Image 1: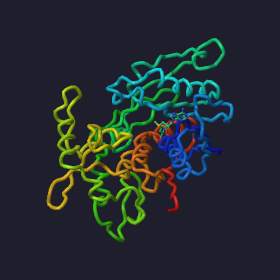
Image 2: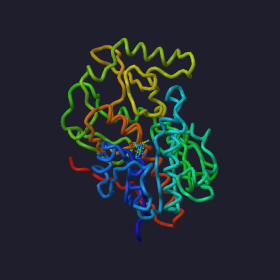
Image 3: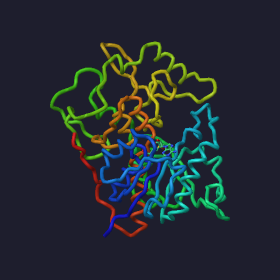
Image 4: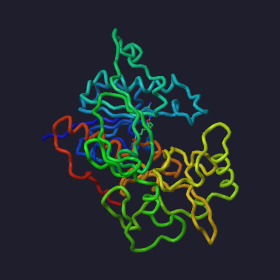
Length: 364
Ligand SMILES: C[S@@+](CC[C@H](N)C(=O)[O-])C[C@H]1O[C@@H](n2cnc3c(N)ncnc32)[C@H](O)[C@@H]1O
């Protein structure tokens, strides 16, 4: 049976694509305008043709009609962390409208646009075609909008995401604690951040030789010598005592925003993985470590963030700087959420779901 095809707009490093690829879809094309994103997508999902373009001025007719059109236009202008929630809405909407223009022109059977829940406050139910750059009378309707929690689909992260479009409901598999569903199936308990942190050797210091690292999300393991983006020098990894104090103050005693745990609670799914992980920032996750007999604090490594986003251990982020790697990872749709959506579409199409996620092993 031929595979269902996918076009991924604003593809980033490929989190959204990867869930569909793991479920046996053919992600034929992926578009972004940022080289590190395109390189990451290409090296990990080489069967997809990547396209560098500004989607705002790209002609949708350059692509064949896909079965599924997925995409995550940038959310910075809508997110609460941008200028305390005062981002430029019109600027953000320009790319959302560009995505809608693709949906209207290519008319896929399913489409899913991912963004931050805050967009729900302002996203209209229908948009004038002329506002999308289509010189016709009439409207574009957005049939569905719903916020999902990635932890409910097995991600070790409580990332809330707004999914707009035309798509079947993904089947929830996890709940805060192990509970029976209405039809007597068992929800598994949420996966906690500790499962990710404990899967890896201590990132500071000597690399242990001859050990295997087990993937916290998949049934694969990797020789520790092949583990990328994890080991760090203590001076790069550890927060200075001043930074740690400042971070703690911002978290536990912030005047306007809610209180946060310091250090982060490992016995919960993690908070949202952000695109920046600065030592001083309130949004940065903080992990306590014992170093030379003292309790010190560090941020998660790029690899730990990637596992919180459910990327397999073999997934590569071939960027020049650590800042770019954190951005590629933090921008992503958690792969387990995307795979749950892919599965729901396979059911609706009456096709067979793979018994296990199809993983690729990228040669090092
Ligand atoms: C939120 S990220 C998408 C992440 C992706 N869905 C994933 O799961 O990994 C948004 C992406 O849009 C890209 N982007 C921003 N403006 C763009 C434009 N005008 N044209 C094409 N891509 C753009 C950024 O480079 C970034 O990679």
